[in-house]
Length: 112
Image (cartoon, rainbow, N blue to C red; front, side, top):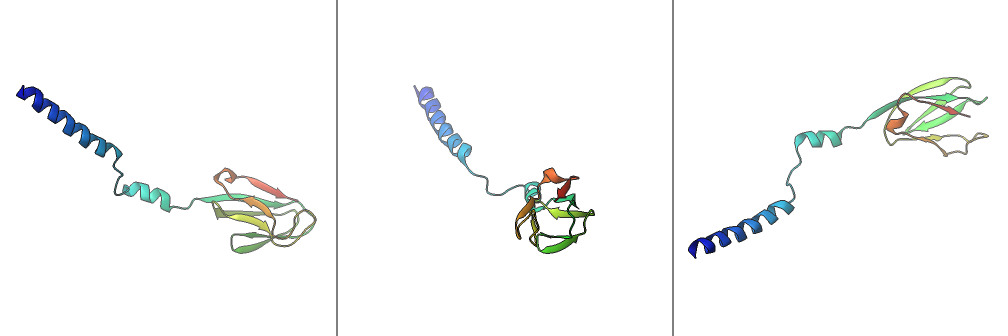
């Protein structure tokens, strides 16, 4: 009888403790995981002006001019917006040309 009582008590206590351990949240993240979230990925791509007039584009905080028929190599962090600075026949001032993602790496964007 004592063995049954003792084994039942051990079973109840271990099941209670294992439930707490299973649902407990970690208190800290591993150092390697912090490093992964801290880095901003830079994406290199090319903008090409296929129109007949110079084109001013704003990438992040900087304004760049692309001459007609010329290309411009840019390297921007992912998440940056590339917008038209001045109104043209194809784009209104402030309109979105591209949103930088990792899919644009090595691509050429033709702007008309």
